[in-house]
Length: 116
Image (cartoon, rainbow, N blue to C red):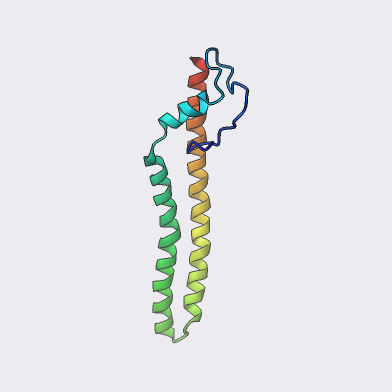
């Protein structure tokens, strides 16, 4: 079951051995209540910018360089290639940051439930 922050395993065992909460879905359902669309939208917007911005900038820069040096289409292709590499690098870094934040939130929620 996807909660937005973690995939919850569906099993017959109480995931945290919390007394009084025998349902295997208790832990996942509790996290799902706390999740909001703002997290999803923020992550998607951030990652989408890393896809679009370098390619757009690379295209404009490549077209301008090709016009200036009369090398159509080689500088355009080169700048789009560099833009692709920059996009992938930015996507990986931002995805790692977001996954780290999500894991920290998940661990914090898990510890709060264990204390109850």
